[in-house]
Image 1 (cartoon, rainbow, N blue to C red):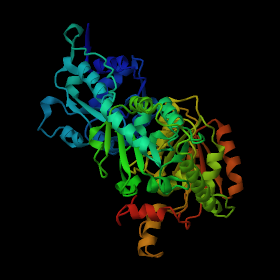
Image 2 (cartoon, rainbow, N blue to C red):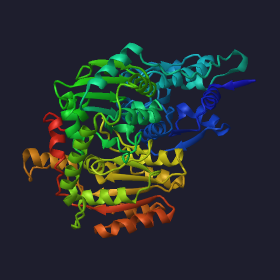
Image 3 (cartoon, rainbow, N blue to C red):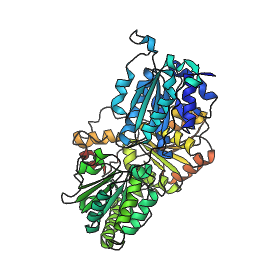
Image 4 (cartoon, rainbow, N blue to C red):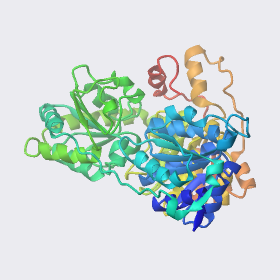
Length: 561
């Protein structure tokens, strides 16, 4: 039986247990789109390729399996690049399949012809062009193996349009095979060296990042914390891997958040970085005391010496390494050993949160942003998924957000990419239809992928989008005010937009909120509508978080947005 290249792609995706791909149709990928009709792989059509890739990223974040985006050649490919870059910097496994000009048209200025693979190569772990139709399935399987193995990240596969349209007998096709790379355990000698440092420490801290989540290390993290008494902080997809209400968890590590993060990181004598990297969020390593010992648990050896070289590098899967480390410390430490250190951190956290109470509990009109975030956090249930998008909005939400279960928190990460919110929320509801999905988004960020409201409505996805509407590019405006004065804020005013009415016009539910006491009932109405919903909350544009000042300083004068 003869099948064409698009059918080969569809069959390979099925073998990889892919349930859905995100895409916008195009002539260069028409054979794949057509083949998916007869497959078990759903095709979710979006309004922009950037959003399609971001939806694939959110799927990977939630399922711990590579998300898949399918884009057409030329502008379809270039539209996708921002999403690819965001996933690359966040370390999210994805497979991007792109069409490209036919092989016999190269150099002839054909429609949408360009050298795509050389453009995308710096952004991905692996890139391949398939020019032999019999190799298509094997290349798809290799793409998934590459995305899954080692440090997570996106991969890129492009297939010329004529190759996708070529048919051949199945007996001549290289079908390849599905591979499941075994996660690497850490070197026992490195584990022993790390255990020695932890056993000798008086003020140890562990920061759990996305490596714990992708390494399925939640149980081992809990066992480590309870056996050793080491205070745990979380970041990125590590949030919820140890619940924020666990006695050994002190919440997110972000120093600008009310809590013990700043005190802990600046006072610790032993910092265990587990599946996270020394980045802006740790002041590029400057936040750690010069005398502190740093232990790096990471699957990527390149992270051991970034910004602040590790005293001990434990290279391997973080989930496995935590188990190894707990075993190595058995009988050497107990949870009471650093009890006074935890008490000191608890006191610092209580004082910091108390200092923030005035903003968080404010009844002011226009609505104080911290009050909006408090109301939203209080409304959410442990199983709900929270998506966060925007500059100021991300800062405010992360100052109050509690995460009780893993895989419930989605935000851009180090790329600081605006526009991820709606795509993340749409994909979250597709991947986890049994859970409520909320998005908190700034009005500026909302504009980037606003038409994905239409995608959500077309696919009947009841997500709740809460707009932190300060009628400005808030973080940029505040940064300019801090640097140049209150009157020197060019290009930052957006003005009033009735986003809720725009969503209503497309068939969704919309409601506007101007008073803090009305927030909860608006959220209840949005959920009860059973529709894609927009809760447009008018907030105070003049409030500058005290936490934005150090965040701006972290940017070295160039801004952290």
